[in-house]
Structure formats: structure tokens, C-alpha cells
Length: 183
Image (cartoon, rainbow, N blue to C red):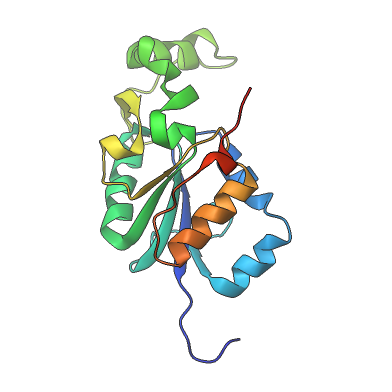
């Protein structure tokens, strides 16, 4: 370990999305070892931490805000994070997750719990077992202040590496044509 210096505290969070952004994060491959030397991962779906910690330097948030638990977590993240990065297209625009918006929550719940049910076709009438859906899936910046946006479905490992390193150096990442993708 590198003496008594404190490594930046980094978190990754998965809200309403598919986990593709986290899979792309894991595709950093050998750069994960370099990253492990630079940071302390304090919260992530790839780590078994139950509560979001205080004093986080950088938080990457994947997924749209889809339910009351996501909304509450977004506020906790903002309160305890220096930088919040909207991580991937679901977090930045709503993307695929927001496709549900045209149907409404009741139709969505009916489809999931009644029409497609194999065993029991009863829908939840209270929200002690599942989170209460918001009327629409919304991008993270509609709920909290976001410091930077990393687009992509999912973002490439190179884009993720660039964004994290910029934030670790106290800079908001600005993506130039090097990272633009064409059809």
C-alpha cells in the first residue's frame, strides 16, 4: 500500500437499467488493476456493501430513476458524493428503460403480474415487497444535480477509463471526436 495517503473513494450504482454499463466497466480488463491502485471502491453492485457510504469522491450511476427506491437512492448519492456521473444512456436520457412510459404504470404492472404470470396472477396491492413505480422512468438529472454525463449503451471501456481518470484529476470529462461513434 502506498503509505498513509488516502485513495479517492469511488462508488458505482445500478438503478433502473440492464447492468450493461457495469459489464462495460468490468471490460476495463487489466486497467481494473491500475484503477484498484488509484481508488478505494466503497460501494457497487459488484461489492457486498449494504448502505451507501458518506464522503464518496466519485459516483457512477447507471440506469434511469424508475421507482421510489431509485429516487431515494439518487438523493442519498447526491448528498454523499462530490461528483456524480450519469453513467450510460438510461441514466442520461432514460433510453430503453423509458420505453415503458408510453404504457403507464398500471398497464405495466398488469402485464407483468397478471398477463404473463405462470403460477399466481395477482398483482401487488401494497409496496412492501416491490418498490412503488414512478409514473415515468426518468433520467437521473431530472431528480438530482449531475456533474457529468457519459453517454453510450453501454459506454465503451475507453470512455469509462477516460471519464474516471478525468474525475480523479478533478476535471469534468469533455468528450471530443475521439469518442464519437458513427453508424
